[in-house]
Image 1 (cartoon, helix red, strand yellow):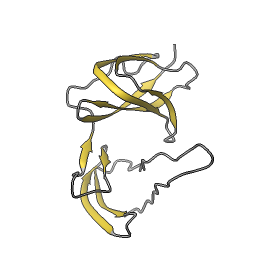
Image 2 (cartoon, rainbow, N blue to C red):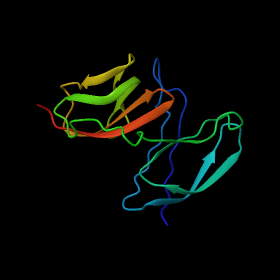
Image 3 (tube, rainbow, N blue to C red):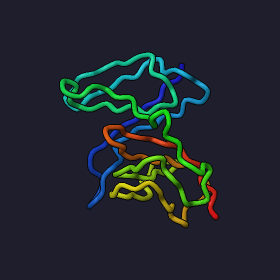
Amino acid sequence: GRWQVGEVRAGGSFASQHEAAVRFGLGDTDTVDSLILHLPDGSLERLAGLSADRAYYFPEDRETTATRYMAPPENFVVYPNPTPGLLYLPRPLSDLRLVGPAGQLLATWPEATDYLDLPRALPPGLYRLLGVAGADRVVVTLSYRPR
């Protein structure tokens, strides 16, 4: 098999920090054979058989918070997708973040909204929209083709 390594780092330089997400490109693989987490307390956790094309959340405190699958609820469809810039959401999302292809944070919308006008300076491409709908964390992939 193939090995990939990703690292979450705290801090960065003055007034900055790294994103707390690690992304892996799996190609046409539909299952992750093994994921090994090296936790800050020095312990190791090994997970197996994870589905691909998903985002997973692994909190440090495993006693009070279970590992959760993070994906759009089944009926959560943004439109139009591909979008020319104005994007409609099926229900309001809060704490919205637009993440670029390399994982960089490009824009944020802290207030709950059911539509977005994406920044016009974005180049065409695939982006991720992350947000919160009630108790659900939502991750949506969208295709941007500017007006």
